[in-house]
Image (tube, rainbow, N blue to C red; front, side, top):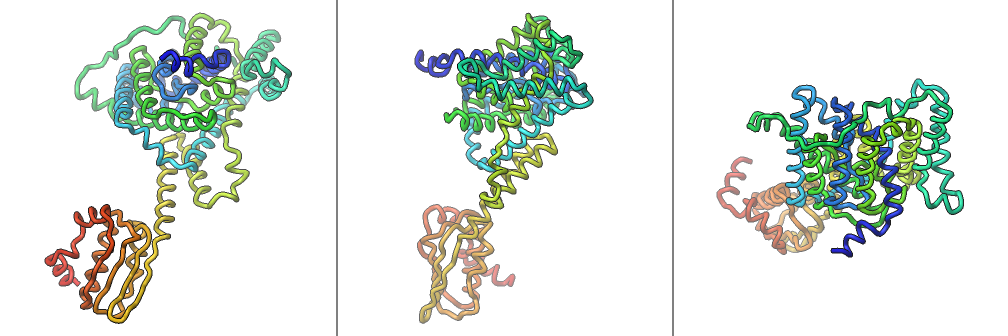
Length: 494
């Protein structure tokens, strides 16, 4: 146990402490902004971010990943808050956690294996674009000082690491925030700061049980929202975990992450916070700032609470331009530039899936819809590709006609399979060899039934050879060419 704690918590102490501080500073304006989107007090988002980050550090399945209040989740809460208020949001948050814990025990995290690389790439690119777009309001209708500060921030972020010794020991985003805050305060610049985003809480969160009636009517109100929140939260968390896996060349425990997200959301709801999930932007900041272990996630949440409650006078002075520079860095670093640079090297189907995923997410701002569209397209392309490699070879003999079927027969290839048989050739016996074929579904069974019955109507004896056990199982349930009554009925219908 001690070895496991050292491997996950204390193997990178300095890097995790510094990166956690950077993430905590970047979390503040986002948590406030997401609270505003959801229509609740800023402290709801800030308490949620603190609670979720601290809890997920202990129970999550992906060390180094940051979870907190997110925009994707906030968008789903708007209608619930408007129609029923904060108390029902807290109840929905608790139910969301329960559903996510259930998903973990059902091992639904394993479903991520059906998400192709092209969908993940589209997801990453879409989030990079959304992160950049979210910074545009801070760069619109502002004075030249804001542009100068943002440019200076980007210069510090990208050039500071080249300074000998010190450049490698301090995360450049942290240096950017500290330096620009100092400059803004020294020069007395009249620019937008974190304090302008909303009122920061001045007390620690307390235990709150949602003040809602515990009856079926309440369940009817919150269940649809909780299901949507649970799905989107797990989808974004598992996709982010996949990206962090690639960045760190390590593996995450997806089912544990599902349960961890659920426990974190229940904790958030009990402390007056909204539901949240993993944040790709903050997670990338953490990794690029040197964070690797669970300590970085814990520190981010802990520092967040300490800063907004006890150091709010200082935190309010941070210019938004400094945080915009950090988020632009995240956007640039998150985007998969190779997907554009090497676009000609990839198959057309891959490019279509990537651009469709990006387009749907950017237009709808709904990550779940974008990933769903990408997965459906990828599945269709895969089914079409597999369906094409199915072949039927005709081998005529003296008094018999032999066919050899090779490949996968299912809904996508059934029509081609059916069209490969020549019913104009007269034969006393037809042999269909399926030793090298596999029949997957009812459509495939129906296609073979039609072929057998059609040859029988032409007076030929039909024999199917070499069917494997898995295919036999499907045929035993759904085939009817061995059922004399069913065949007779089909013949009379024609």
